[in-house]
Length: 422
Length: 163
Ligand code: SF4
Image 1 (cartoon, rainbow over the protein chains, first blue to last red):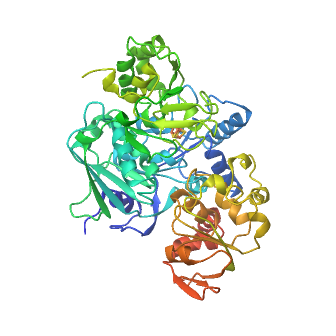
Image 2: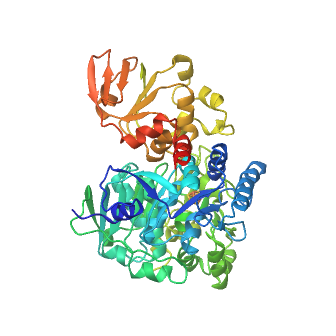
Image 3: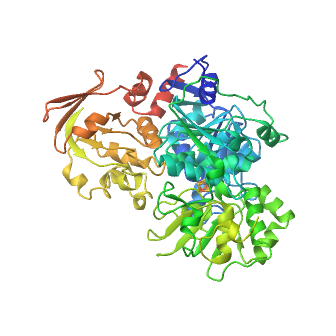
């Protein structure tokens, strides 16, 4: 029987001709990743085991991005442990502030990950790189420690669910809306342990930035990974970035999916996920008018250049509503610089928004925009769990950059076409 | 593995297993003393060595913190049986050597207080109180091997010493 793209990548990295769902394998890892929260524990485990050398200093990536620039002494200690480890083992990919970005925007941008790779990261949103046609999944700190030593990871081959998006997404419907709609349909454990494979004409037409946003949120449906087979858009994106030889895998006709969902992309309007689970989605029209205190545009989901362009397009020549605090986080230094060159930053500042250096910041309630009791945020991030952005009695609504920008002007949840008529 | 069952519902998250306010330590005894605190504040007072946790769907969902399975293991719970586990909790449990089993029928029917025995090699859970037997699909032998040597780092050390 034919294999899915996910099965093919795992088989090739395990030295096997064929694998099937449920099978246990030890796979070779192309890239493994840790951040300032998870890597310190991995480093501790690695050292406790008395192993003196990492498997390959070119394949380990450390990104201090969650609490950086260090927000307090504890986070400074955590970041320091990464820096010391990186120096000691001559790691090629250690990203100090000033060079860093949010890990899941940074690795594709720097060409560290690419099509056909098998990637693990001690961060649940590692599934983002599936947008490049890679198998990429989040693991724990001990997994990372073991990978530092051996370059391998144990995996149970996941079953795949296919999501076909027919038609073409309407102008204000982004990748974020497609994935919110999907999670709303299948629930937060709708793809538990499984690989989510996205395809169809609406996906072929989707820019890379939107594909990253979709695969980023596969974990929000409980999935092990999200994946989109590489195509012309992918090739275009990796040109000049990815230096290794890309391997373009595709699912075989007749391969085995446990389930197929078919959606009509033209019918999907911008979505909003209500507190406190990403599955509580509603079309924006149904929740418009809800008053908001803070709006966040950024994160590994929606802090890329096209997200900022969309937001600036809506905010140009307008002001943020007096009752709103708008915080914008370009995801990487490169995105920040591009936004500066294109005049987007000026648009944001003229609109009276805050623009921050790249960091995870408020996405996990770390720093740079924590919510007080009873406050309500609208955010382009990926999780709206209780207390995620601050006080346990604050609320988070999730949306696309277009909805966030439109709402910043009115002070309440607003469909973008009410601000800009197409 | 043999012990008394303590039962929990669906979607028990890592904050209930080990609340974030205790994450400023990696001392396993201290972590154990707060095990399941936000799901059942009296849990640690009630349990005995080798007792068993039985839960519903998606046990261990939420953050990827390894402190959650560590707290359960250090509390001397012998194993966790659930309808399903959240993915990263599942990995972390195997990696630190905490035995876990997926068995929807057992998770459904076993009652709090029942005397339970798990027979690994036979792939069987026995409820001595109910006098019932449940079968589960044993994990692949490779996964059992990791659990048996006490976790992934021990396993890696052994492999590296041999290889
Ligand atoms: S931006 Fe948010 S979701 Fe993404 S890596 Fe940072 S904390 Fe995690």
